Image (tube, rainbow over all chains, first blue to last red; front, side, top):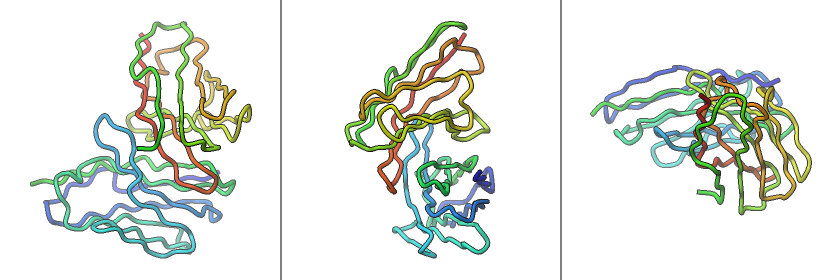
Length: 112
Length: 111
């Protein structure tokens, strides 16, 4: 089955700097890759996603890139703000089309 | 937030007792999921459903059962709760080929 790895497990950046979180997946048939942000005590919230027919997608300060050949995708956050501090999860939807496998998460801390 | 509710939101129970968690959606989505979230393990799939009375096991299904008698409701049952089942449980929903959205979660403590 699908396996998703995520790095780094923790990341600290200064406010205003950029943050990058990387994920790799194992199943070349996976075709949808969402990113979730989870604040302490709250539910995971979908922040951006990308499908396998697209190489990059951007929404204001966040962007996601996908390299299908290498089977990895990354989340980029620019001009980080303290409210970006949270745990971020990547996921891949498996080749049966409806199950999602999650990475272990990255705890991002944005220092003022 | 998508129309997903979970009940109860918090529960403390004793080892060996049965526990049922409820997930209710108002989106009429076909797919529903139960995950557990533990420190260091991220989100792990327990069971999922792809339609009324259609369910299947996930990665960590031992000790759990599910039922879905209506499109809008997906129940997770711990037949005999153990301390290892202390966790935060999230329900999620998804339409065919669509995004997945999470409910607010249930914090379960088994003493």
